[in-house]
Structure formats: structure tokens, C-alpha cells
Image 1 (cartoon, one colour):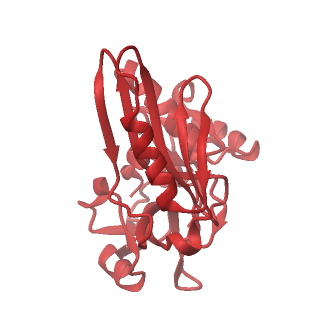
Image 2: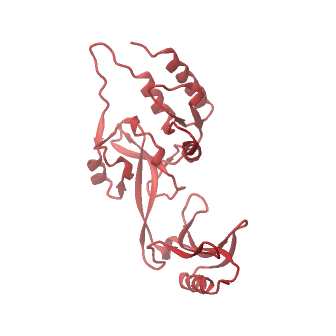
Length: 264
């Protein structure tokens, strides 16, 4: 049995995009996969934004897969007298070996993960505000975000934030304030939001808060993609562009709900 002509065209296109630097692809249906429906991207975040937009207006639901993993699926077909059985690792075993590790909720029904493919994981990083947060700030959201107050001292920033919230002019106002913390060793200038106050004369007033105290250590979930290195007998972690990264390193937030569990 060989790969049909349609899938062969898809394989050719994926290899071309891979050589051009793409690492991820979005597609609708594995059984009826077509070249005109495949979209390739350099990063997972780009692919997720595409899926979020298209899935709102499309009957078919786009899913995301690593190009190399999809190529392996397309090129793996049954051979007479043989059956390919992929090597798997129990998730419980991985969590025991890597205590800060967990899996996205939508993967909880999967008892195992592949040993030869990428899969999403969540690493719970301990953040100590005194050592890891060099700056707190209050941001006024709008057409142009404006920092209205900033300090190394959490208490003074919190006091300013609460005072500003209580002084909103209720007559004719639309204001959104955010209390944020800058993470010291993030791979980019990332601000973690702690509280948000929103007021609009027509939509009411509310405050959103996270259960994080600015003076006590807390757990920050960081999403990576992982792959088991069979030679070294350990997991390796990757960012949204599939560049290898040290576990615990803070990277951009990723919504992995679009990741295709059919890869398993």
C-alpha cells in the first residue's frame, strides 16, 4: 500500500515549507487532507492566532501539528505482515521524574505520550517576588497604553492602584487599570498581570484579580513543547519556534487547545 497522490502532494508541500523555515502547520481533516487547506507557520503562536480566527467562521475545525510529526504520520502506512507500534511513555512516569511537570487539561484522557514526537507540557515555575520581580507598575489601557505609576516596592504600587480605582469619575468615564509585575529573567519584556480594574458608564464596574501576593512566592505555569530524547533518557523542552530551552525559563504564553492530539 502506498501513499495516495493527494497525500503525496501534501508531503511535497510540507517539505518545501519546512525548508523555508516553517515549523508548524494547521489543517482541517487528516483523512481528507489537501494542499490548499494547509497553512504553515514559523511559530506556534502564529498558527494559534490563525486557528482562532478561522475556527470562528469555518465549518471545519483547524488543528495544529509540528510539520515533521505530520510528515511522519503521512509517510507511515501499514506494511503487509507488520504493524508499526510507536514507543510510548506513561504520563505518570514523567510527572514522577519531573515533579513540576503537568499536562494541559484536554490531554488528561491520554494515558501515555509518544516517545518520538513533540507534545505540550506545563512547567510550574516558582517565582519569588523579592528576587524575580524588579519592577511593579500600573498601566492605563486604551488606544495607547500608558504607565501611570511604577516602583520596585509592591506595597506602594498596590496603594496607588487601589486609590486610583476609588477615584474614577463615575459621571462619564471609561477606564481600565492593570497592576502588573515584570518578570526578571523572562526571555522578553513580559509583564504578569495581578489585578485589573475596569469601569465604563454603560457596562458597569468590576475588578479582576489573580490569587498572587506581591510579597510571597507563587507558582507560575509556563507552557512548553517537549520531546523525549531516547539516547539521553530525558525530556527536552522547546519554545513556540521549537528552539531548545531550559525548563523553568519563562517564555511567551501559548494556548495549546488547538494542538492536534491525533498526533499521538
